[in-house]
Length: 235
Length: 313
Image 1: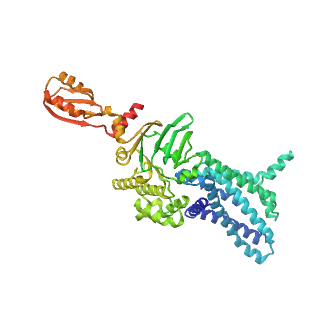
Image 2: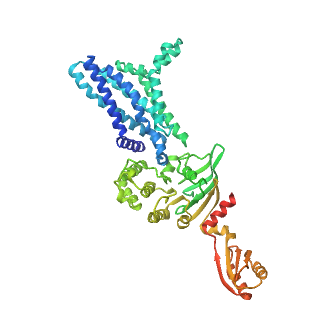
Image 3: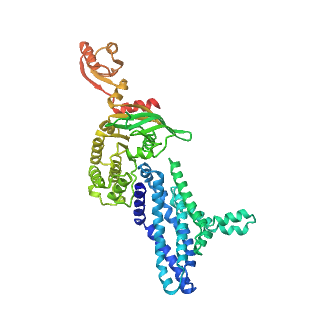
């Protein structure tokens, strides 16, 4: 585990010594703050439901900016040669980097907790639904980061990594809409089942279902395993 | 007992192109071996396979008794590797970078401070210990690359062009660090600089087009290409054909060229490296001619290198 922690520590330092972490946190918190204020003061909705929906879409667009550099910059800067020749197994490198990216996700989620203060002051939100929404956000973000990290391990160009990741994540976000065009029952169910928006929507409604939780965990685990395979393949 | 580094028929191919071709040798404890070869000879690829960065297409590498493919973490623990282009995190400061490498190499917390002090002092990095990597000069970057390789007290040091980009003072200091490490541990380094291998290395491996052409001590290599030895003499006058005939009768003289266009004659004898052939030449010439000068030329490392590389071309 010490190898994982060494990589994790390095990643955290790298995040906060570059402007990317501050930029992503600022854009995310400004975005969610704007939508929360609009929903609360203009639409008069004293719930987190709409804000969670906006948080989900913002995460799908912004998290690739967090994940794009994870391996692509190591390749282009030549530092992967160091990582690959230190006594670290590929899974330790993958996990250390992933935990670093997850820390960014948790910071993004924590930044929105401030929104709850006026919500509890002026309304009567359901605490269990809020918990479920945050759980869904963290699971959605975990899957997005793992997919982004895998894409980053395939290229030396972080812009390519970000664009491929955004395309994939938007695909998984909107794929549920395709079910309306399908007459085959199996395809209708498949499109709905792999839809990130649909499963995240379930969490926002307070339905923290095992099926939705399993889908996000499976996506994250699958992408991380592919990530380890990509590193092995590079040798 | 196994050697710290052993290569058995190591091969690396990319499609149809063979970059390293059935290379086998070993590096003993307390030995410095230099890899010599022109650009594209396969030196870096071989070092990368030993370091575990690249997997061989076939063959085997063991480091400290661990197979690099089957036990990658154990073999990596025994290696300190400094690539030609130092792998540095630009936004870290020097100590922060070394601290990360120490943690990744599982240096015990209690030993970390002393090990950092040791490598910082050995590589003369004290003045820039708190400086960010992106602000370092090329020489300091190269030395930081060497410092990270020395962390964790590895059994084997792999250095790819360790003195490239350094000024003469830094080159001398770096050579001293390598020499001092090589007294007890093993070092395998690649370089283009011929005097460097002569000054540092116990044995020299000559690599060309991915093939190991020769591996021996500098003296051993010179002996192996002994045909390149020559004795040059100047003779006042006389019959050139007689002189040539008498010289060719001497055991050890292979070929004689006499330049009789001007007096004194310039005579060049290609000789083998056995015995004291120049003394025999001097005796024979002095008996019947006026010998004005005699000098033996042993092959330089450059001669040895060119002999192998041109022979393989």
